Length: 195
Length: 195
DNA sequence: GTCTATACCGAGATAGAC
DNA sequence: GTCTATCTCGGTATAGAC
Image 1 (tube, rainbow over the protein chains, first blue to last red):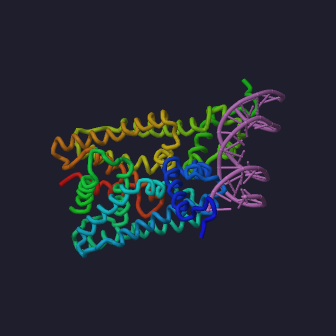
Image 2: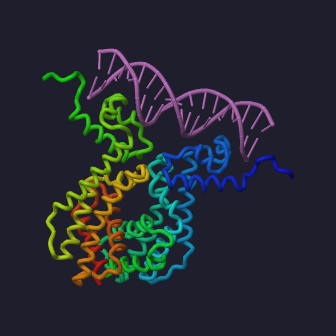
Image 3: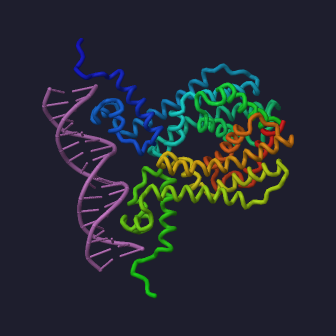
C-alpha cells in the first residue's frame, strides 16, 4: 500500500503535541500561535486541524495526559501499611516525577485559567484525586499515632506546594543530585509531621 | 483654574493600574487586550497611551510596585536577635502579606515569562533580595544552634513555596481565619527547622 | 487628556486543489 | 494528510481634532 505523498499521521501527531508543550511552557498558551506550532513541526497551519479541532483541545489533551500520567504512575507504585514509609515514597515520587517533566508541570500549574469552565472542572477533579492520595496517607498516620498534624487538608497543601516548588529552581546538572534533593525535602517533611 | 473637559489625570492613572491588575490576574497578561483595560476604566484605547508607553510597561510597573511593597513592608517590621522569633515573624508576615494581595501575588508568579529579558532581570533581583532575607535568618539560627537544617538555600525555597501556596486555596470567609492559617503553617515550619 | 478614526499586522480557523 | 489561499476578527499602537 503506497502512502499518499506527504502523509505522516503516526509521527506527526506526537510531534505536534511535543511542539505545543515546549512552546506553551516557554511562552504561555495565550502567547503561542498555531502558526508557531506548525512552523516548529514543519507544517502549514491548516494541517494542524487534521489533528486537533482547535487550539483549546491541544491544551486540554496535554493537561489531561499529564494528570493521568501522574495518577497512574503513582498508583502503580507499591504501597505499604506503614504510614511513615508511605509518606516517604510519596515525597520521593512527587519530586522525581516533577523533576523529570518540567514543561508538563509548568503548563499544568500555569494554564488552568485558559481552560473553558467545563475543561477546567475535569482537570481540577484529577488534581483533587492526587491531593486526596496524600491526605489519606496523612490521616492514616495521624490515626496510628505516627504523625502529629493539626489539619490533614492544610498539611496536604503545604507539602505539595513545597515539593512542587522544586521545579522552580532545580536544573539538571546543578549543585545537588536528584537523590540529594529528595533527601533534603524528605527531612523537612518528616520533621514537619512529627513532634 | 478650570480643567480641560474630560481630564482626570490624578485618578485615571491608578484606575488603569487597578483595572490592569484585575484583568491580568483573572485572564493572564497575554490574553488581556488594551481595549479591555480601557473599557474597564471607561476610556477609549488611545487614552491609555497617555499613561503608559506600551502594554509591557504596564505589567512591569505592577510587578515592580508589588516587589517594592513586599520588601519595604518587611523591612519596616521590627527585627529581634532571637532567630526563632525572627523566623516566626517572617512566616506570619509572608502569609498575611500574600493573603491580602492575591491578585498582585498571582501576577508576580505567573507573568515573569512575559517580561522582556532586561525587565525580567530587574524583577528577579528584587525577588532574590526577599529570599535572601529568609536565608539570612536561617543561617543565623543555624549558627546559634536554634535551627537544625541541612541547607539554608534549599530550606528557603521550601518554606517560601509552602507559604506562598496559601494563595492557591485561601479565600476570605473560609473555614479558617487568617490567624489560624498562620498558626498552622508556623507549626509546620517550626518543626521542619528543629530536630 | 480624551476622543474618533485608522494603519498595520497577526490571530484562529476554513475551503478546496493535489 | 498537506498545501495554498483566504476569510474574518481583534490585536497594539498612532494621528490629529477638540
